[in-house]
Image (cartoon, rainbow, N blue to C red; front, side, top):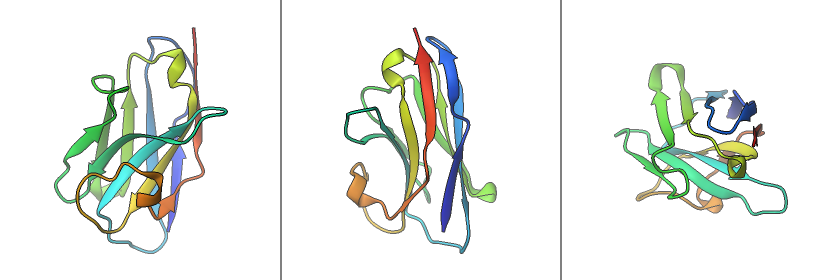
Length: 124
């Protein structure tokens, strides 16, 4: 299973970006997909998650109301729409997949599959 992120780049504060994460390789039964980010010198932090079967979404307080996670089941793709971006959103963004479980997976160790990351830089 491979997860490939795309859509990162440089944007001014207040702008928007949409990240995509496409899954390829063998079909895997997924419970949830998530987005994390990691800024230089900081730990990887959870941003958002979507429960695959129900489409229920969850977001971290720091991005609530600005970022939206969504999915396209037919395309095996998960998205992160990021609006009203701030310089503190600058980080490498990773998507992750979890094959089974319950509840809301927000920890790095909850996920089995990871993408390579895509850089998001927000200038002030």
